[in-house]
Amino acid sequence: MSLKVLVIDDHPLVQQGVAAALESLGHETQVMSARDAEQGMAMAAANPDLDLVLLDLLLPELDGLSVLRELQKARPELPVVIVSARSDLPTKLRGFGLGAAGVLHTSGNTMLMPPLPLWTIPRPLACTVAIVNAP
Image (cartoon, rainbow, N blue to C red):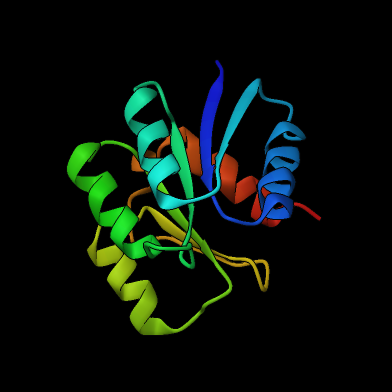
């Protein structure tokens, strides 16, 4: 089973690092990258077979929470994980309130998810958790 992930982040090193981490898990993985909100939303619309979006909060022109809001309107079934160095509680709560499936902190090795029964966690999120817990 192939995993198709969209990384929306304006930093090429983050895009490359996430792609390398996902591909190192041993799954067949296709990682697409978008450098800004407009490109990311267009790619999400053009790829209905996406399994997961990893979304930076600090994007040029349009912030990540606005992108999350738009993605949830257009593709409510698509899991979106916020990837950010910000770790403040209000940001996390706003993200979860807008439908984020999780928050991955780039400044540490922590991933937060809203309380869900384990069997309801989509496969792409399980892969993301594996990245976070990798040595």
